[in-house]
Image (cartoon, rainbow, N blue to C red; front, side):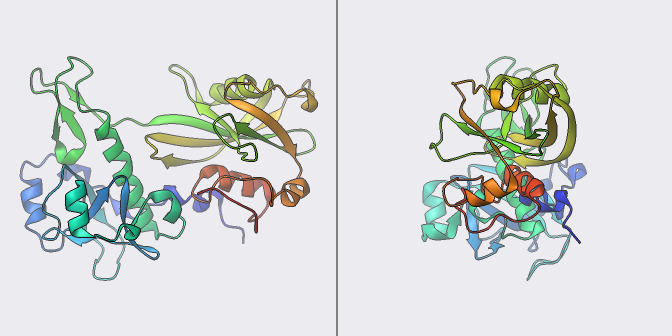
Length: 315
């Protein structure tokens, strides 16, 4: 049987209970750090320790110094030496602390190169940790009064001491679209910031006061000059680079639109092409497609009907 689309999104996988009710406990970290079962996910420059296809968690006694701690929750599946129910803390390390913990920089990996290889548990923990840590990195000051904020509730709230106002984590929704014409050809675009041979699906952020479906229609028209209809939801995937939630749709070219009349906006999108399945297959040696950790790759292969092999891809 074909694998369901949602099961092919590496960063949407989860095998942990975020245990949000425990976050408000005043003694949370005292309890966790005093528990020999607690494991720490060290983070350094958005990288974690990886051994082959496994995320390396350390004991709380091994990781005692860090600039930020966030309680990620408890695992829900067994792993070697780490049974279901293991509490996990993400800890951001300084350069010195990271090198002391693991001096071999090759063992520190970003999420994108390894996401597809990791288990559901490890992919979910890494994605969650990176998303919340990136939020902290840009919210050190109160948007209300500009004062420095302090971390509370296990790392899931920042508070201004001067007026008590709280700031909560946010995610930026962005739509990404498989645009199809009447012949079921797929529209791919090349961004001005990429090389000339790199192509992906058209995408963009949802604006305030805008529905997801309206964002699909607006973004496609802005980037290609094409009007689309019938947006249909496919699935979603967090993209913590730094804080996006990618929401996948399909949409059809409106009947009154001429496929050949594509108009790249010239600023963000500089090239647009329609591909049949055969044309995309035949272009694999020259066209750079999105990496396997992205929802774009999964959506393209969902349309294609299988994995695209032997072509260059981007991590």
